[in-house]
Image (cartoon, rainbow, N blue to C red; front, side, top):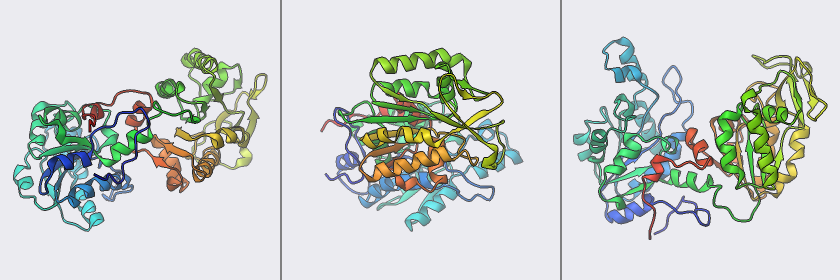
Length: 435
């Protein structure tokens, strides 16, 4: 059976059963599939969706199911509805229920697909609505997190959700690192595991974010962001699988200080300096090449708004020099980007997780912008470029470069945990393909 949209797993990696395998097992139309999607999208004060990428990311799996003549029951969370969970009946609770309802998402999805989408106003009382679906219809259940049971992985809630359908698909990579009723409980309670699988989006994430099973090709990881402590598991998880490790952003200053370079008033985690030193030693012992900023664009304090470049100063980052006191490193300079151009050009696969500077505030966006331009170049030349993490994805969008790389991950915490080599409960519960 052809499986459009699903990339091959790296050599040596085991693939999970997916939506195509499940449809083949079902063998006939008019079956109903419960699909866990991630429709937790940002909305403005008027209820307008400001970024629909997560909805669009689920479309291939939804279309795959309905084109097979089967019905799609979609379930998701939206935000953190603590007032609704508390059970109070007051104006604030009603506002939260309204603002975090998935009803507008159902309407938006219907417009995207030019197809009627049924909405079930209670995710645990939708049996009658679901039973009336036929011939490839779509139903969106109300916000799963209106019930505390969802995040507690309550078996009773899982049983109710499972009872709606003949099969289950998890296509919500953004919540795959959580063992919730809809991500873990439902597949766990289904007796016929051949009717359990992942969607096209999750299959793509697993293939592109797998840096453990690689060939002898050159692999480069670019890790930025503000804190070493946040990215430490990712750095440790990737270190044994990459040839080049590029460290930037605020976390780089902890590594620079570990090397004895002055960093002025730049962000530093004093308690992580010894860890940073150990990581650099481990990388050197393993024959890995580590790149750190060789110049830093600085300001006298953290800016709250865009500032004139004339108010900045660039310092050379080397032992005996570095950033003067009173100056704070907020971006890497052009020399830094130039220093790892050749490593990027020689790479067959690149992972970018974390910006090079405070990209939200000009002129400290230039380091990340120049890096993204380089990623665009090597992508055109055949390098697989994978971008993950909220800030990195936001930077791509800000520079209008989202389509300039090979793959953009939809996960936040799930992306970090997968890159770190951790198991994702929502994925591990899905059976391996044994065909």
